[in-house]
Length: 165
Image 1: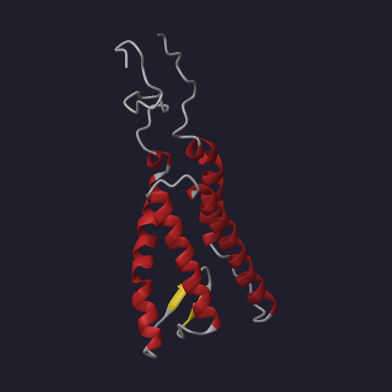
Image 2: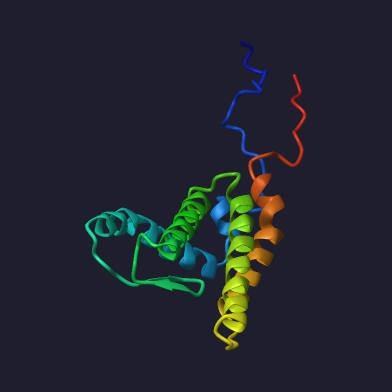
């Protein structure tokens, strides 16, 4: 190959990425804090499953769903939600291209669960309570929606420089 030619496959050419080195830099500090928290809970999921299989009872709670029975309907729902949040946290931390899309699905599902728990409290228990998680979840969805384009197009160059032969 001629010394004056540059190969398109040459990965040593750096394209500008708006001054960011990693996708992770698009995340605000509070999302990173929750990412670590849900990674920790996700790592504890196998322990919870084993304890449940051994008939141990322990408290589990997420988004207003609370139970002491790990293999009840609510217990399985809580573990599934923790699983989804753990996969989402891992995808965000690992900077997967699809992570923000999954985070938006996670936020919408979590908001729906919170609203369902509030509706259940109103109609079945005749009490009213506002789930404060809704505020954080709405901000989470807003932020993920805001950064989705930059996150998904992070590796694509804004413009390909002309190679002069």
